Length: 170
Image 1 (cartoon, rainbow, N blue to C red):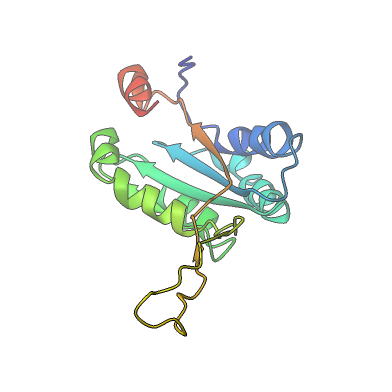
Image 2 (cartoon, rainbow, N blue to C red):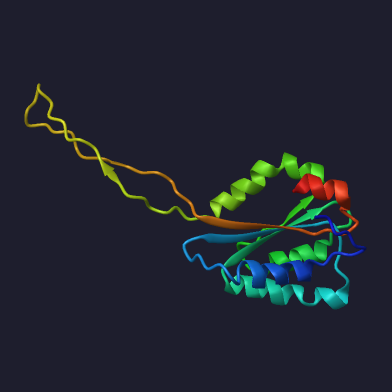
């Protein structure tokens, strides 16, 4: 539900993600990613907590991807989040409409962060070739790509993004 507000509450969103999302469910086999969509700047007194919560997420092996939407997104705060870990990558977009245009690029980056999980192999049948009885087909294995991923989409609900764009980004 859209809450609205004059300013961003990025630190509160990160705090909630740290303690209530990734603080409760422990799936060590899953890559953990928080995609933070923000369209405004959090005031300095509140913004001091951003680094603390991003560092807490880093300790829990959560990658934070800040996405700035529109002209009022705080480049300074987005870059601050990005530089807390080498895997954190910021995206700066002109608005919510560009989010859909760059969806594949962002999802591609998220998928590249996830290590492949080996799955059981299925040996193929060994077939004898009748023309050359001494030749046997070598056994092969079929591999599938499996990924385990926990992704949280954190939508900042300030008035800078507005209810219509908030609903679009969901």
